[in-house]
Image (cartoon, rainbow, N blue to C red; front, side, top):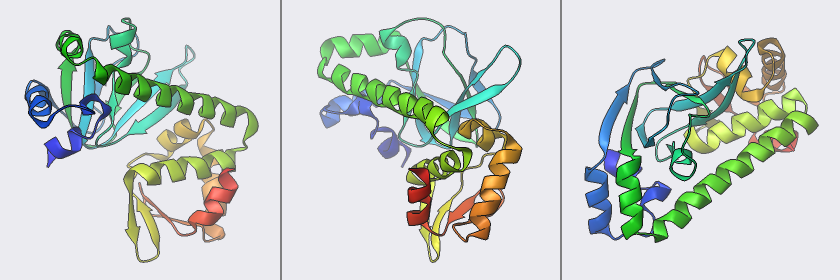
Length: 225
């Protein structure tokens, strides 16, 4: 059920069931088709979102037109909470990687709720801290890791969110194009494809369109270090 997925978000941590249901029912549904943009980088931010179904990508565009994919989020994850603690323009563009269903909460509603339930703030701050830690890790990877290592780490991260066990490994339906996967890794499409081809030749992965089957997770984990 959509509500069960949404209620796993940090927003609802520590709440009593009755309070949780009340807040959830005050949220508005937002449906997106693949490629639809929820908001653009630089636009005013005044809403928090929780993903019920589908995948959302957060990305930034450089002045010269190059794009960088910051993250791909899935069911139970939330984004947009930064505008609560630091009101201002959106720091990234959010768009749908696949058909998606979101629940949105206006900041005015959220601030009023936090006034009554201050304990929830700590969980939101923890979620922000975890995102900052991931950002720091990504920056370190760009400096210290080679492209194959970053590809392996990206595949493992996607598997932790969207992976499904199969008879021969873990199938990850990431729904990303080759260009989007390259943006996520921070490298050219050609270099990323070369790394994936090498992983395939070594029988670490098997590619299936916009999905990949991780055949040897241990080897990928060692390559990601």
